Image (cartoon, rainbow, N blue to C red; front, side, top):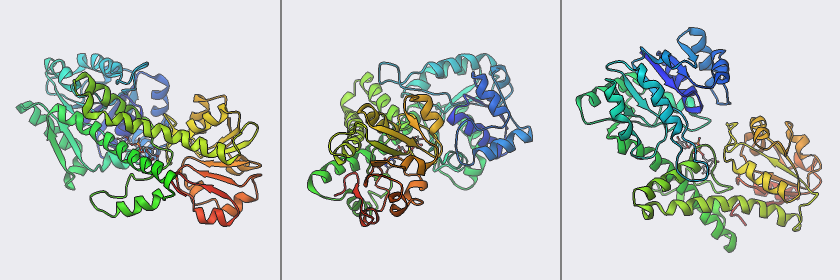
Length: 436
Ligand code: UDX
């Protein structure tokens, strides 16, 4: 099928390349000429495992093209809209200006029978507002949320857990859902659940999923806070409750908390939307989820400061990790980078390393010191702070090796990803998050 993808950021670039890889002919459209130029040359604009390969293949096949010209959308059977919905400046609600601009630009190029599939994460009610304009152009709007995780984005796009299509309760809506089934043919053929809903449900599925995940992480981090004043070990607690199949061990990783381009902004936007709808109290707990999450960053910093005797001024702190999670170069709302910024503000001599995210981190915080090489970062450090659980720190870095490099013997494990016994045996003072 011929598809267009409007917005070539994280979601759109991966979607365009992934759709080409399953046989479609795709044009990716973005207003940023630099992004379009890079993608047209087959260069992935960010680090995402597997993306480079399908991008190279797609561009080489001639079935994947990129342009800044929205008129190129004309003739595609399905138009995916995957532009960003960042947090509003000065507020918690989602900023819908990119969504509105994308629809304004696309509408004149729609043809009778086209399907427009909204993929952006939007406040519930957005699709119902856009649908009449799409219908006036003879097309049908489907809301088709995306659940991709960074680091697994290609796999999550081609082979998702489930597909959700919010459609109007009309024959045109039914037909549009059928068109989406054809688009996602490999997943549909293998029996992936394909859930057809109304618009509001589809929009809510997305924010509810992210709210649940954020709540699960903050729940275990709240238990970490209690563990810290009782001497309990939150990792054992998580293992023990995780054996209950109703609870499950996934997303019970206590530590410095969640960040990234989705969970923080999505729970804030959800709370703001609930308030607009007169249901502030229904998701008031999300404000606590957010607050618990932010307190963990303070806690990691506090552990470093306390371990260094209360004063970090002039002490060298090696910060391992800047990305908000491993297998990503994304530093948006990264707890890792935030902890580094705070320590730097306290006067510590902070040096940050990361296998992928240094460039992005430097752009955001040029005042900090970055070092590509892990061991150079560690050299002569008074304390080591691990804040992104890359294999380079978790698996490929022994306490004995680090002992030969650093000045001090203090390690704060912001991700509970090191073997505490190994570090203690090597003479280190080990501090985990919510662990004795
Ligand atoms: C998330 C959702 O998982 C995805 O479905 C949605 O489409 C977009 O938002 P992503 O932002 O890529 O995806 O990251 P995710 O893997 O969910 O991790 C989010 C944050 O939570 C990271 O900072 C991670 O380090 C943290 N986290 C995750 C924990 O602190 N503990 C855990 O147990 C799991």
